[in-house]
Amino acid sequence: WYQRRVRACYAGHSDRYRESIVRDGALNPLCDLAHSEDNRIQKGAAGAILNVSHADGHCQHLLMCGVSDSLHRFLTSRDTHLQFYAAATISNLAVQTEDPSV
Image 1: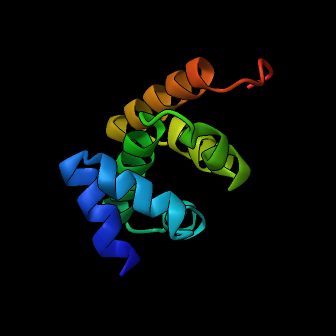
Image 2: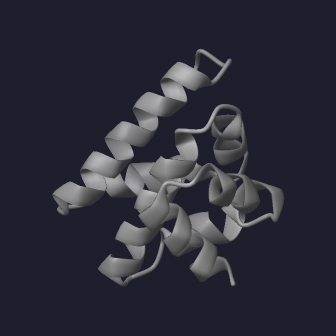
């Protein structure tokens, strides 16, 4: 169920799916997927995290679920797609969160 929602968020960029991921408690499993050893799963999770970070109000939820560990892992990856997703997500977090220490 979560994987279907994550795929929909990643592929469709739909506000409805972004909302449902946060509302239904799928952020923690999404952050867990980011630690997968499978590069395809990491990319899917990274893309979904980036898309969720586009929606107003979701950045704080991402930070509370521990997304910073995943973003650090992506930034230090040799995969340039993961690096891009992490950098773009960090940019969204910096712009949209109220805590300037982010």
